[in-house]
Image 1: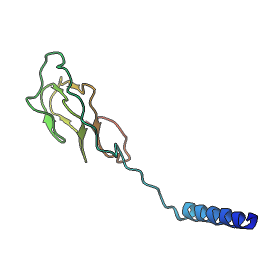
Image 2 (image 1 turned 30 degrees about the horizontal axis):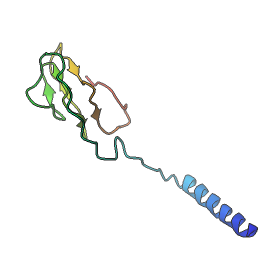
Image 3 (image 1 turned 60 degrees about the horizontal axis):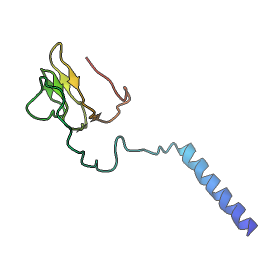
Length: 108
């Protein structure tokens, strides 16, 4: 039994070595992999300007906005199209792929 275990260990070690040398990358998905559970309704926040409906990926916002749900965006999140605009995420998140520039950020 001892020889069998040594051979198995040598085989596993050789496979790991080959995988590392071949440059195979193990890709992990970005963001949540399970469907997001339904969030309980949030109590209304402080009164203030905001859109009539939920914000959408790629939308240009020109007035202060409060998110009403998480945004899962394949490319750009929200574009801020005016000065003096406030984006209140209200505990929600904006998810998207990392393109090697940064995981989170604002672009002008």
